[in-house]
Length: 186
Image 1 (cartoon, one colour):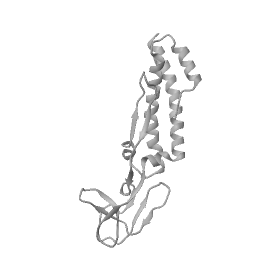
Image 2: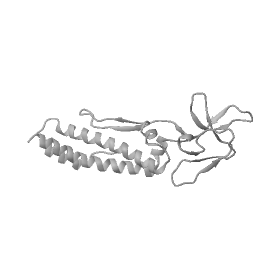
Image 3: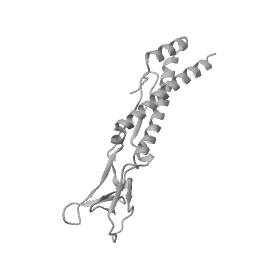
Image 4: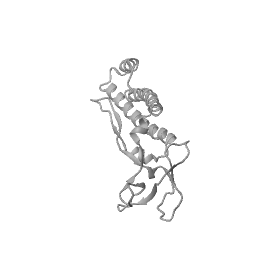
């Protein structure tokens, strides 16, 4: 969680004191810019740790922007586990004649792991995924999954880096918004 400290608020109030709605406007604009920067930073950091697309991360994230009446905003990431086929797997397409095992890598910097009895298949919906058989017969199949985006974002080193960048941006943006408002009222 990132917040304005008391010094920032006192300084902003003293500079913007005579301008109507200036402090809430400066705060909400700074918060909103910090939120978009934090989302971009989150995507960059997760991609530096995991073999996952930026789109897969972005689509799980929602930003609730700050307003003049409510100078607080949030970023929420919701979603379930991501299909293992969306990570680095080999082979990537179904091949019924294949005798080589399925290998997968979820985290960057780690080697590919062999997943015994797993294979790539295309199901009736058109989805291509990594599966294993449940039991001795051909069906049912069980799809294999990697971690969810909220799990990736929840790692201590990932969340710490995101908060640091957001706090740094919030400080810079508050200064910028104060100057912008003051320039408009000269």
